[in-house]
Image (tube, rainbow, N blue to C red):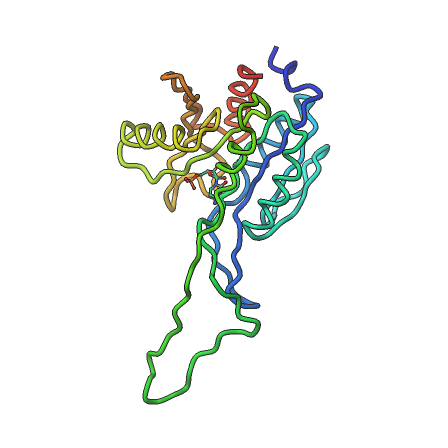
Length: 230
Ligand code: C5P
């Protein structure tokens, strides 16, 4: 029964972590490995969907039957996702998108000064906001029911109640259909093979728990929740 609703559907998944360049050798990045997004792509392909995986700085092998669009920055990810979303039935934003990018890109490597009078001199890097791609997708959808839009939220955990309360606020603010919440920390989730998530649906107080389990099993639970909406 779980295979039917995704059969022949077009799904777009963003995965990985964006890199925001500072100069030719440096960037602002994050700890996302892309594993959860890739697992979502693998499971959707297995269920018969046509899958476009917009992968930010991919370091994982391309899953068979999946079209990978490699990108690096948040702005590149935005254009690739928006293009692919135009004829999609489902968009899942699993990528860790940088909220900020350096206001300026230095064409040459930023160097230390060797001025003995200012041995501790260091540059200041000014940041500007990146667009919220997920919110933009929700806005572009307007009153249409399609595509189904899924957001992720990485929360550094207080207690479960606090995490869920914060997540409900985020779901309402973003206006997407589902929010997949995971608790993160240096030793949790990022780069790990297992994940524990809470799946929240807009307009429902029910919370689906998945894990601790492999990222593929978590992906299956996310697609089950999507299929209830399709
Ligand atoms: O607000 P927060 O960053 O926690 O929201 C996370 C969700 O929003 C994820 O689905 C992420 O892919 C998406 N996001 C985005 N654009 C940003 C930041 C996050 O689409 N600039």
